Amino acid sequence: MQPKPSSKTREIGHISSYYCGVGKITGLPHVFLHETLLDENGSKIGLVIGFDEDFVEAVFFKESLDIQQPVFRSNKIFSIPFSADYIGRVVDGTGKPIDSLGTIEGEQMPVFREAPAIIDRKPVEVAISTGIKLIDTTLPIGRGQRELIIGDRKLGKSTLAIDTVLNQADVDPEVYCVYVVCGQKKKQLEDILDLFRAQNTFAYSVVVAATADDSFAAQYLAPFVGSTIAEYFRDNGKDALVVYDDLSKHAKTYRDISLLLERAPGREAYPGDIFSLHAKLLERPAKLSKENGGGSLTALPIIETEEGDISAFISTNIISITDGQIYLERGLFQKGYIPAVNVGLSVSRIGSKVQPEVLQEVTGGIRLALSQHQELQKLAQLETKVSQEAMKKVHRGELTLELLKQGKHAKVSWEYQVILFYAVQQGYFDEIEKEKWSYAENLLLEFVKTRYADVLMKIKAGKFDDAVKEKIREIVEDFKQNFYQESDEDKPAGIKSDKTKTANIKPDKVKTRR
Image (cartoon, rainbow, N blue to C red):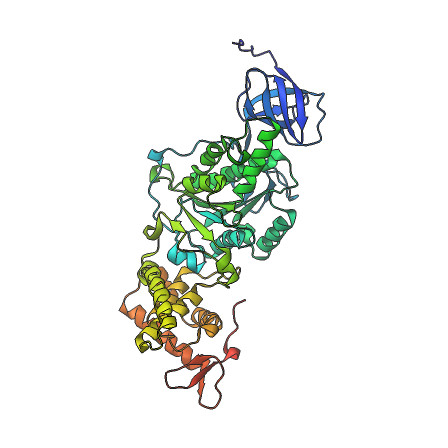
């Protein structure tokens, strides 16, 4: 066993092998895991990610490196400033600003922190509003939960996460957001930055950018840096949300690093410790107890599958770690169901416990109603004669399915969702054709926002008594009187009443939402 160096001794390492920012170092017998490595000028050049008796495994922050130079220990674990100054900033995978807005100051905090102990946590009880009707009603996410978003490429996984971040602008109490771009193309990063700037999202958000063009070190560190930034707000009694886009690319980066280090590959060529790496990352989100500030950190990791295969190694790993998954299916996407979430294969293990009571009351039976609709639809296709009551249920189920559809970045707060779902369930819109529902819905939301903001406030406060329900009926009647024009002569393919009349929506009454 090597003797410990004295305080005046400085250990020197030498790079014995190096390729693409990954190398092995001889010497440095007393180095520890995740220690920062320095050059002779004291500048940070790398990070220890493993070692054995003969050499140290490291990733370097720059791919262009003089391998002849000596390497020194810092005796410090890799850390970043622990500060609120990150809000509104764009940083790279190592936590350094890349937005030309100056440095970030704060007490140094290790990025590889331990997850909060069980005794320091409390149950997840409050929902994080996503503004996505399908998720808020059937797959609610709690503050402190870890919900996986999984599916093939180009199905809207990132869109779900981005829309959740955008929706926090209208949420009270405030939720601070950290969006980690890991291994994605630069074009996707630029699109996210442009959108955040246009929507003023940087007022409460941070972007950690480690694209496919960045070093292995930056891509490896990015999720841990993003988690540490978000933990500042959690540890100070605030609510935070972190998005990892995406961990499948992070896993591939770690696989490449491990193969360059000649580690023994395991299943699908991934190293055996990839599960431990992601488990340590995803154990950190939590809802803390009041004694520890009462803050929360919610995580939305994203995983990309191939041909819908959720049984792959990384997919099964993350599914087993998280508290549920939102599964996007290509078949639904091709049929026009946006978001293309397969409710049957998706699950939230916390579920309705965190839903607002009013929303839970209105949407509690939505899954059962949709199941009944599918069975009745099959019956209607087989039978030549179906009762009028059965056809009404089929039509109402079709309206509910249309109601669950939602365009890109078209957020809908949960108070609006209560009005929409209650009105459809009560049959107030049974006369509308499903093809025209989307247009009518946009008009209705603008109508409620401009004329009945007081009803929204009552619902948000948890009030949903008979008076509020009667008010919703009056809203629908008022909406029909103001925006429907019945005529026996003009019969477009629009909203049809039971009196064989048709109803035209007056588009000039209100601006539609885009």
